[in-house]
Length: 246
Image (cartoon, rainbow, N blue to C red; front, side):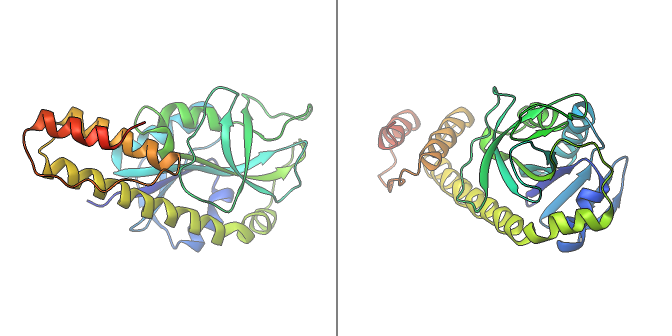
């Protein structure tokens, strides 16, 4: 089964532009899930706990290579309609941004209630629950948060038209990001799988190799060509890791 990109969205109004753009079809389950061959999108409803539960369900029932928390956020500093890739949550959780992208980056603060005052770059009610759930299943470079500024800390009920105008201009950029995740994941797994098979690596060795390859990719370090005659597992693994020096 080929892996998919998962998307967790709090409300249907936020998800509808993505559902239409990616031609996602509804699946009859305990949650509202919309899918095609590449994407599985789940509606979580508002709040950290709901986001965590929906994220756990999606990651437990699908083969997911990367997962995205998409939705609106408030801000006292950014303009309505601006879109961001989140690089820090509550000053203590840090998604690793591996692939090149077209977004600006920003931190976000996650609250239990709607925020209508203060100075914040981005605020929402789902990001922390989403991340804490996702990190139980995936590595930090496989976890992504994309937020569109919907208000300047004003409590309001957005209409469908407002959400369409807010999100539709960014859909191509979101598509490009999802495509880059798929491409990077394939490259990463191809190399690791090739070396693990060629040199008969153990599960533990394979995981260490994968982490080392990810480190190279995170830091934009060119991967060396590894090609030597097979001897024994222990010695070959040592030689591979020596080639991938940190």
